[in-house]
Length: 172
Image (cartoon, rainbow, N blue to C red; front, side, top):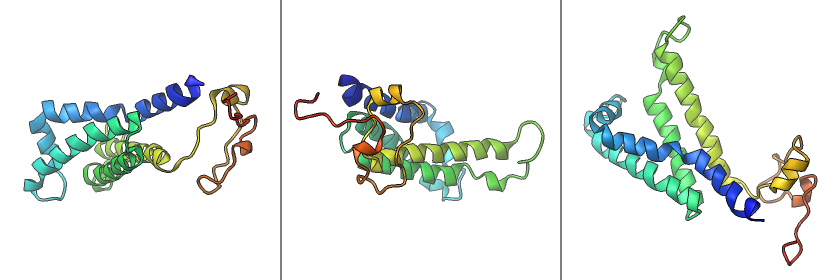
């Protein structure tokens, strides 16, 4: 029971957000480099320090909220929006002409970072909108089964997941 209720959900959330506190720390330790990156977008140069301070707060606080489950949905939504904004502002792969160049390419590097940001957005939106996790035992018994992903959130009964039985009132 502890595996399904505590360990797996916390592990999933830690894996999803582990990079953000380290990114916040990197911005603090290498402040001048972070300011240079913040000033590299089309926004006015004076916007760098307040944007950077805001980014540090978001990257430090939101992951903590997500992992402990305190206002986790709004924290995940804020972090998802942060990822979209940073992808657009700081990974403009479309501005570089070396996308198809052999070897190192600034455009491809930004392209992959841009897509990684949107991969994180997808995971964070699962925190915002997803309902229940399938129990670990069900996954172990039926590893190739699928979930009912095209049903409105909260409407797919647990019985839609093969092998999932609802516990009785005693939790057994």
